[in-house]
Length: 245
Image (tube, rainbow, N blue to C red; front, top):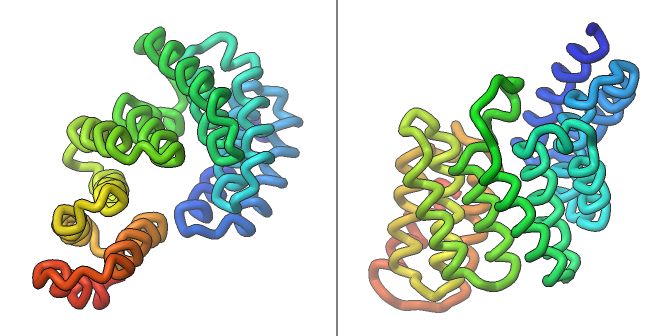
């Protein structure tokens, strides 16, 4: 019991490091959490740690390691018992596979994630996994389509995500609005991307948000600047956004 609680607390600290885009600090926490989770002999606790390890590997761009971590997740006993855990494992796997250019395998993993998610039933689960709802499933799907270069489809899934996020979840809404701006910029819809970027800033100023949101906005701005557009609206946004990106 104590090992499980300690592992969960350290995993939460690791996620704070992930949110701050500090994968090395997150990994230091997770190495300790993994030992404690092993001592707990609790499959759900182990899964929780491996989920964060997979995120940390992905954030550090070690995508082969992220795929290996996702394999552990989807083969765990908790994933065999509960399709929600199976779905998250499959979609983490898809995200890693697409980034090591295993397109067909990534699409199969995404399909597996969708099928498992469709089988999910409402039941009591630990607080930490409640983030993985329909809006999050759609958001993670958008990342895979974006990595495949299908930014129009990523745009579609991000619109679905934003429609499903409760109004009180400002950080999530800001993060995925920033990703929508990036998808729009990648499609060449620069003025729309500027408007969406401005909306992101209004939802959650970077000074009080996560670095993930700020980094996504910075990537959007970089694309827009690189376009060389002289449109007054775009020039104005580039100047304006320099104050908060």
